[in-house]
Structure formats: structure tokens, C-alpha cells
Image 1 (cartoon, rainbow, N blue to C red):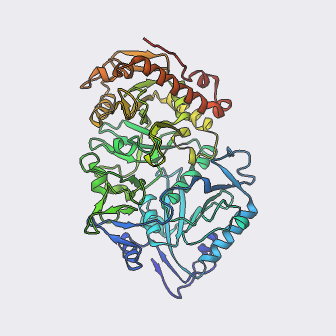
Image 2 (image 1 turned 135 degrees about the vertical axis):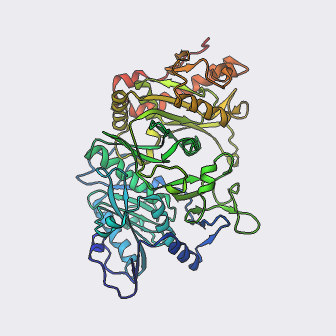
Image 3 (image 1 turned 180 degrees about the vertical axis):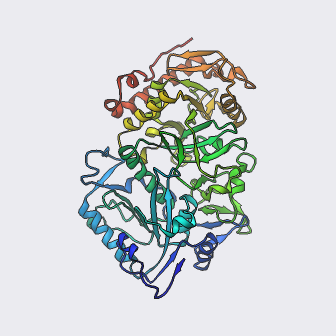
Length: 538
């Protein structure tokens, strides 16, 4: 339904704080949003049929500019600190008032949607966006109501997104002109000063990470999930660059979702209605499902182009390494239409270990899994622009620290309870380096990683022999079908085993230093699962 010109103002918009609008376009189809973006000169149609836009100054999230309103709902439960920064109710009220004053009289794009595929745990949401392409992103990423649901839609939450509005730090309590503010009392998320669309989806994910553990028995998770033809489900945790999207997009399995899920009393469910994938160096042979999904209706962000100006060049990182595409989940062939699955048989922790220390596959018990869940480890190779070439550790609690309003120990406890209740097996998968650190060793071959995952999912690892790794407290297989057994023991792949021990002990020290802030909020069993330095392991 399109509201234009002097169409009467809908009373339910008053819930957002909007008093008037010059024009409001309601729930436009993707083709209409694409057309309006092109007519405004804010995008271009690519040779794939997808729309490409640029998000402006911000090409990624700005964690330092995310705030939670501190009030009687959040005061005692939120884990306040660098990640969850407080903003006062008075400052948030002024910000909301000024933001709505900025939008009053402007044309707006309204989108009604749901978050959460489970009917008992979902939240209804209305997005009010200044830009047509922001609304297209919301269409792609949130769950789309049926015609019957749309006819009686009542939003519980509002997201108000205005890239053109700049906050005044002195007046509004922000750090600078851009912001993302979560307000649980008024059930709204305010986003301004940034066009990066990921703030929209991650704002609501942060809200779900607070609401589901405190209001219902559901563990929110920053993970991808898929299902085998036999109905067995698996979930994949991993930070950017570890292969979470790539490895869950398996043509032999049905995709449930690629980023955000809940694990409730009757299984797992996707929060979203689409996928938001990185496109840097995207190749059709390595990631065919993602490549094929980039067609009409998909939204490309900050990519480069071939000389013709319309053919995407996915190797071009001129604007950012964080080039992205969003698309509805039905762009993936074979994706599950209901976006739900049973209790997982397997949980995979994906890490790209640039130090070359971790094995390509290891099995974890519950306490060790909880420790490494809270750690959320990967490693990256620093950029050459600052002259630093050594790998750097990256720890992100529960593989999603920027989106966790509660103490990570709470999420880890919920995970541990579910692992024990359903007999779920946890595996560490290293997609990073072997034979030495970056610059000495080499990257794990994707085919070997896929083969190891396939062996686990086909229950072919049940009868192989494992050895205990005393340093990290997990079990490493001595063999695996169709994989060179020499690859499975990381120490044996190094030319100098003593150098391996030194590097491994250094990584253990980094793990333990990172874990110190969380130790008081976890059980003794989890603290005892910490890795230990153990030089010259034979």
C-alpha cells in the first residue's frame, strides 16, 4: 500500500514519535525500491541485476557509537562497559525528539516485518527509513509478513534510520555525529549519521540478545545453521573471515540461516529472512550459492566495477575490505522455507588461526566448549599499511561480543545446558594456517576443511581414534577419511617442533589473558577448562 501526498496520516505511526510526513511509502516491492534508488541517483543497476549503492563515510559498524539507554529495565541486567555503553534517558529522549523533528515533513519508507521464524518467540518490527535502499535492506534481511499478517500488523518495535541526521554530542550524549541507540523501555532503535545498513540488522539482533534470555528460554546465537536431508541440524560459529557463510552454504544441505539464530525448547530457528554476505574476492567456484544469489533484488554495498561500470569487480577493495551483499534467503536454492530445525547434532567453532597452532579438527567436551565459546577466538594478518606483518589475535565473546547486552557467562551457561540436554557434539575447525604461522606455513585447503566437515556430518568420525591435547584440553583425531593424517597434528606439520611449542604457549597466554574479565561470571568447571602452557610436548 502506498501513501502519497495528502493521504491521511496513519494513527499507528504516532507510536514511533513521527508527527507528520510529506510522503510515506508503505512496504514497497523490491522493484519499486530499486527504481526509486536509481531515480534519486543513489545507486546503479549491475550486470547481475542487483542494485549497487555506496553507504558513505561508514562502510562498517561503529561499535564505539552504539549505546543502550540505562533505565530500570537495563540497569541491573546489562553488562556495562566498552561494548555496552550507557546513555541517559534524558539524552536519548532529546536525540529521539530531534531525530523525529528532522524526519517530520520528509518522504519516508515504511517496512513492516518480523524478527524470529518461531511464532512464539518472534518480535514484530516497523522500520522507518530515510533511504529507499535502507528499506530494501530491511525487506531482504527481516522476515516478510504474509498478506493476512500484514492486514492486522501491530509493531512491537521500531527502527528509525536516518543517515542524513547528525547528532550533537554535547546535547545528545553521543561520541560523535553517528549513533545507534537501543531503548528497551520505548522498544525502539535509533540510527543516524551512518548509511551502513548492517547497523539496522545488528541493532535488532542486539535487542533479541537481551530479550530472549530474560523473557523466554531461548539462547540467541551469532551463527549460521543448516540441515541435512535426514533432518539433522548443525550450527556454525565464527568471526568474519573464518568461513561461517561459506561452509554453511553447502549444496548438499538445506540452509536454515547464515548469521542469527535462536535455540529454544523445540529446536533452532532463524531470526532473519535473508543473508548478508561479504563479497571481497568472491569467486563462483568457491562460493557458488552466494554468487548465484546476487541477482535482481540483491543489494550490493561499496563494491568496485570493471571498466564498463556495471560489472562487479569483487576483488576491488578500494572503498573497503568489507564489501557486502544482502539478499532474501529464497535466493539460495534449497534453503528451508520455514527457517527452522531440530536440536543440533553438531556445533562447529570456526577459527582462522594465523599462528598455525590449532588443528584442522578437534572434539570438545562441554566445559571446554563453554570456555572457547566465551573466548570466541580467531587471528588475522595485520595490514601492510602500518608496517605490521605479524598475526594478531582477535577474541570476541560468544563469537559476537558487540551484540551481547548480558554477561557472556549467561549465554555460555545456556549453551552448556543445551549441549548436555541434547547430546550435541562440539568441534573446533581451524580454517587458518598449518606448517607454521602466516608467512611461513600455508592456509588450510578449503577442500580438506569441507572433507572433514563432511566426515563429521556423515558420522564417519565416530569410530576413529583420538588423542588428548593436554595443552588445549580437546581431542584430536589421528585419522580422517580422505584427508592426509599428517595434517591432523599441527605440531608435526612444523619443520621445527620447538618453535611450534613456543608459538603454542604464546597463544595459550593470550587466551588466558583475554579470559580474565569473564572468569568471575563462570563456573569452576569452565575456569578449569582453560588451556595450559606445556612446552616441549612430545
